[in-house]
Each structure stands twice: as C-alpha cells, then as structure tokens.
Length: 112
Image 1 (tube, helix red, strand yellow):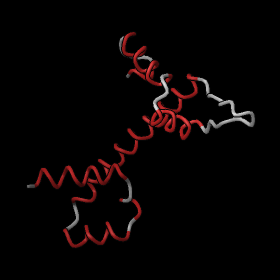
Image 2 (cartoon, one colour):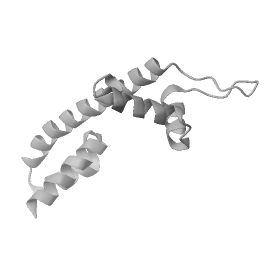
Image 3 (spheres, one colour):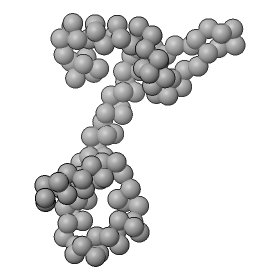
C-alpha cells in the first residue's frame, strides 16, 4: 500500500505531491483526520506526515476489521428466515454498519 510505505517510489512521490499540492478536498480530509487547524496568527498548524500516515493506516485497519466482522455477521444473518431477517435489521444495532450494508447489497445482487 502506498500510504504505509509500500509501492513504487514514483507512486509515493505522486501521493506526497498531491497531499502537499493544496487540494482542498484532501486538505479538509487531513484536517478531519488529524485535528489540525489555523493558529491564532493565521498560520496553519500542520501535523507531521508520519502522524497522518499512521492515522490513515489505523483507519484502514479499522475498516478491514469491520469488513471481517460484517462477513461473519452475514453468515449468521443468512441462517434466519426472511421475516426474522427484517426484524433483525430493524431492531439490532449490530447490523448498523457500512460494511454490513455493503455485504447485504453484494449478497442481494448475487441472488438476482
């Protein structure tokens, strides 16, 4: 993965150039990820790049773990009859994740 140090040097350079190039979308994402903000003198307090990359890696690992939980949850979910599935979806917060929604959508498309 490019952000965790993998990939070609040219890929890493391209990512760094983009991050440092002033893209407003990426700047906002970096602000949300790191909590950086403008200081009292109007100077921007920038986080260290290594901190940003560590945070991104942490988010990637969290996302991967959520996807694994969703796969296991889908196996349990599919064992129930459809009426019970509707009840589970409405009443259980275990199913309130994007990863489970993605699993449910993929399973539905496979069924048709």
